Amino acid sequence: MRPGRRNLITDIAGLRVGQAQDMGLRSGVTVLVGDRPFVAAVSVMGGAPGTRETDLLAPDRLVQEVDALVLSGGSAFGLDACSGVADGLRAMGRGFAVGDQRVPIVPGAILFDLLNGGDKGWSRNPYHDLGRQALQAAAESFDLGTAGAGFGAATGRWKGGLGSASCVLDSGFTVAALVAVNALGSVTVGEGPQFWAAPFEMGAEFGGLGPSGRLAVTADPEPMKRQGEATTIAIVATDARLTKAQAHRMAVAAHDGMARAIVPSHTLLDGDLVFAASTGDREINDPVRDPFQLGHAAACCLARAIARGVHAARAMPGDLQPTWASRWATSG
View (cartoon, helix red, strand yellow):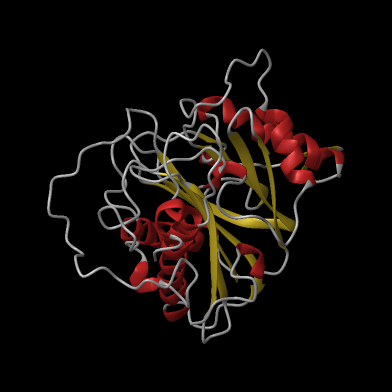
């Protein structure tokens, strides 16, 4: 297993990521879009999720592919970003064909960033426009850290952010993750600098500091954010041809990576969720071995992406939390 060329989810051919954010709002949107529709699934393990169109991702539903997946700030208001993406896709002639109409299929998930110090006194929901702007910005390269859906994110200790990571398996499959880290728990061991995800780091992608000598939680954790303020939302993707049921199992397995990188994770106060996407460019050869390895790779990529998102977060005036880099980038 090795990192992909960009170490981003766009190492999977045919996938692009677009982002838009508003500095005054201190929030933003990230969209994953394919050159063509792709298979998708979802696994929700947090106790406070906020989602749109996730029911149709079940294997027995009529629609088998989606046009885009959206991660957004803004709590329930952020779900309107999916409408902006859908409008943009419809203008492109994209969508599920129903007679002479096209209906873009755009599931999404949101995180809570309404109390991060930004101006939330809007008279018109801003997330529709942010969603459409993010779609228009879709490209193979994109920013990590304080960007898109991670623009106003926070964690239990450090400023959160938008992360991504990829890997290429010996079998030739590419697996990758994209995540907005806004967790109740901590991504570092104590006050850091070591990340919980350190055992899975490739090279020095989030500092190269290695694991801490203290990997045990020695005290009962206390919730450091208020109820409803947390959530880590992610997408894992592969070029392997998966059914919706197989994609769902990959999403389930990827949650292991979230638990390795955030302590604690999947709490009652988090809306932790993982989408899975399959472009289907490479056929599965072994129906047991290949999905087994894809799930493991998805978990590893998600753990790495979470650490990368926090590692890359940058300081801005009015921040309510320090960035990891402001404390440890020079001393680590």
